[in-house]
Length: 304
Image (cartoon, rainbow, N blue to C red; front, side, top):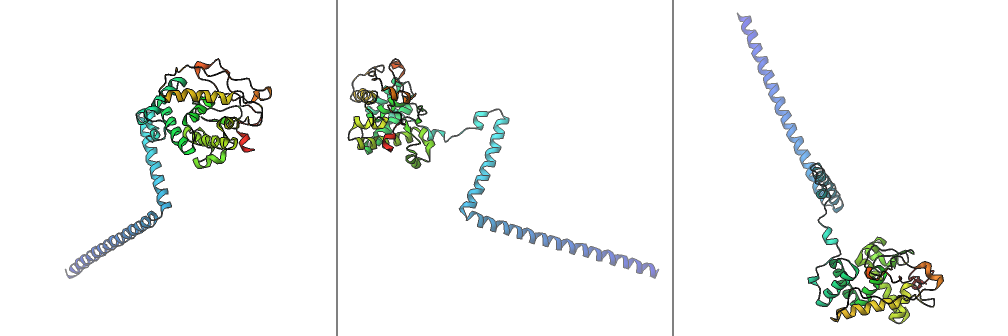
């Protein structure tokens, strides 16, 4: 009996020791885990503090997060069949070249409406161009109707026009000749941004007029006809269109289908350089287009 009692006592002692051992190991594991998690948390907080204290790291994290969220959003939209919303861009309206005609002066709005009907283009983008022509014309000391008349003759208000010699945009500026002027607008692709093209074109025009000593002679420089006998009637057509626009601004009634004067035939040696985009409005389809007037590229006269 005494032996049995001793065995039972030993068994209870062993069980108790095992229980204490397991409890102590468990407590130690929990303590280590808590300390490890605390260290990990502190390390993460430190990394966040250091990382977000640096603009480059913060910007990269934000970009990655935004792209991930955008991708998830687009995947959900595509799976739902709403393709348009999946590629929507709410900032597009701020980039659009357009303005409410109610924001223009009475004279500007009247001219914008007339140009819109004459050249069959929307009034809102024309309103923005008219407004800009008034603003930059004042800074350059040029009549805004002259600027608008050049756009009319050169491109019929097509911002994506390009001639066969490389003149581009609303005012048909030779982008590769005046590429330095587009640096302020982010590069030569700005030639197809209406406002940027207008501003560069006005700078080129102002330089041409200053060099030539007058508007009509400056227009010959602008079209690249400074070194030849005639300009194919280019200056005359621009000034005729400007006269129509001045009449509209002065409150006179000018039909939208009023014809521009016929262009004098350009010299045979210059005919090949006629820009395809220098076309008349639809109502004037029978009138021949103005000539670019020289075998050299348009506006190269200024670069000589």
